[in-house]
Length: 124
Image 1: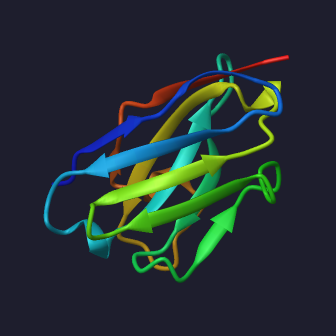
Image 2 (image 1 turned 120 degrees about the horizontal axis):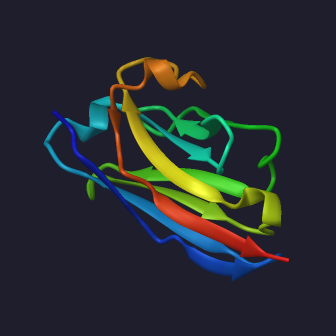
């Protein structure tokens, strides 16, 4: 069992930056690939970024490539999402998730555990 708690969301102006964190409970965090997904009001949950268990593989949605960076610190049981050059269309609730799949996938159904999410709002 893995419990995930996101933090770091907030209100930021377009062009600004935020860093999201996702803290995981349990001693098996390092075996899981981790992903970030987001969901805006009235829209389906969409893939943002993913990272393999050892950080050797990362993947990004085209809409965030070059602006967002996913990383992890297995010693701290934490995964991060650094978000730069934020745009109003990045506004959403951001969720982290854990998966046993390798390499990590973009499919929400392949993730076993989910956090409650943190709100990110980008004003124009």
